[in-house]
Length: 65
Image 1 (cartoon, rainbow, N blue to C red):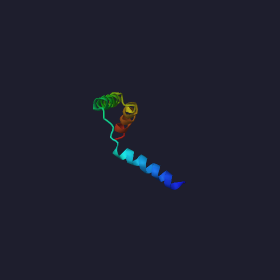
Image 2: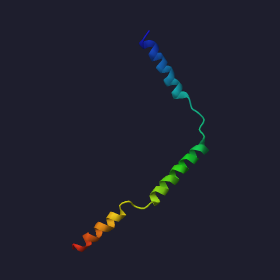
Image 3: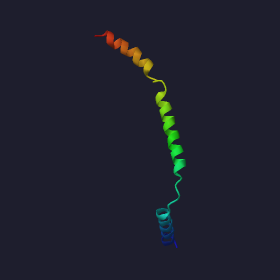
Image 4: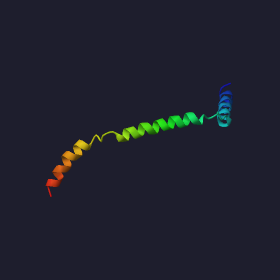
């Protein structure tokens, strides 16, 4: 009673997953994606954490020429 019954259950579950298509809520998906884009845009607008180091070390590089 081992492998045959187990395989049949797995086959049944796989078939259900393959042919089941839930209703998609496109408005909720759009809200979720637009919120993610807004969060990404706000992260891009933050100050560059390396700007302090860039100005410090770039000034020294210019003096060496």
